Length: 446
Image (cartoon, rainbow, N blue to C red; front, side):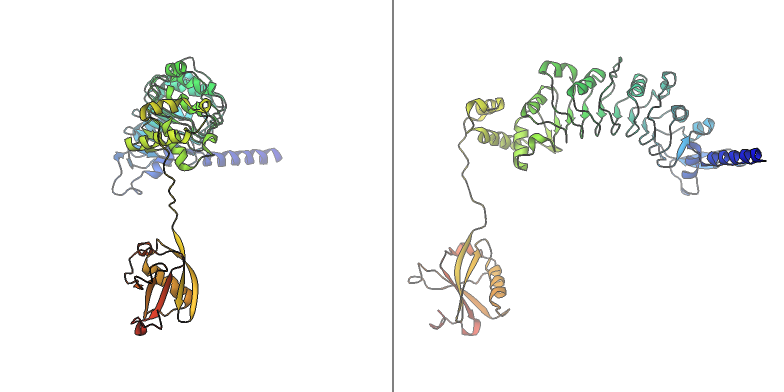
């Protein structure tokens, strides 16, 4: 009896597990059926009547881009259905599922003949190797996303060897601290996005040049890369086509590393925010000093570089270093001096709002008030009303110059939009507040 009960329990648990396994066919059928898209969505597909209990609906609408992320998919399902459903599919997003077997992934991909983009991010593929004999089914894929899959380098190399049209590869968040070199290069790859890993040594980065000789964009953001550690000859040989590099939040701490970026013969775009080297500088200094060191870069930290922007940065660079001892001058300084000559220091202009202190007279009260000379007469009225509890209406303001009062006399502050500095107000001058009905300049008020 106990054995029979045990067998029943095992059978029930197995059935429960089987019910929990979600297939690609089930999810696609549920999401893209005519009930969800009554007016159509993509290519209409009519399926012949299915056997009882089949998950496949009779009428589906499949777009060229199919997104079935975070759906609990663990298995492929019936291959013949996949071939029928996905005949027109070109982009497939399978991210955030439970696919942990390359055989199941291959069952899906092998039945999508025009697949161009494949996203497998956030599927548990750590320790699961792709057999080379199955890899040919990925041959048409041009964009492959393997973010946070912990996929092994061996599987990455298997994929790149069998995807002759692969152009973009995403390997972020895979905990790589080293790079395993492939014996076979992938000349088709143009973009490698490998941010948010644990790479630190430039000797690991160097391997990308050997594996991907036509690489144009290399994204290394949020790695701990400490230096750009190769000679000009080596960088020209390894990265002859590199046009964009992203070193944001890396560990670069020397200007020599920035100077070496000029060794990439076709580099046009650089991102280098959040590096230790730039922390001591202001935002303006960071931008100007960085740009002046990179004469060929056309896009810096996401912003296009204009001719005027470059000239301003290079002139700033000269002035920034011109008082340094000769032995401390960077090589770029001499190049820029030969271009612009020795520049005179910029005038030290104080752009802070100017202030002055005047005596404000209201009846028998005299109060010393600090004025912003950039403010207007209207703003002065508002300030004095709050300070002296003046009435909202019925007052006039007169300016009395201490130096010129015997010659000029009081000047009424009439125009609310006029700036105070235009009256040439100085310390010790006086502002007289007079009620309108008594403001006809009697001697008792002025």
